[in-house]
Length: 136
Image 1 (cartoon, rainbow, N blue to C red):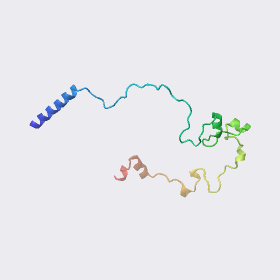
Image 2: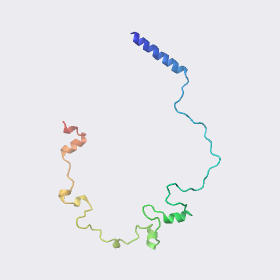
Image 3: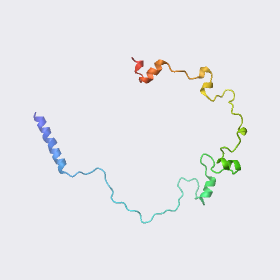
Image 4: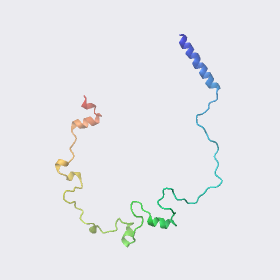
């Protein structure tokens, strides 16, 4: 009984002390920000850049740049209409679309020994119950 009353007094004292003190947040704010007086907006070379100089213009950069292949296309009437390499050739020039011997376009064309097996009722129940039916 005596221990309980001592604990109550300690909690009451701690609560009273916490209420009288001003709360000090743990986060520290740095204060108001000011913009710098001067900012250098000139172009710089990145330290990891492969070349030592900036390109003369965007056009000269674009002529040498690559993104998943060259960015420039050779201009021809067909490719300029189709937007590049897609549609630039007639379909007949691509050759046959039939699979060669040993190639299959769909799993259903495979020999029966390689086809996917159907689910059994036990497997379906195991999936639906999260495996609990296997231990029942």
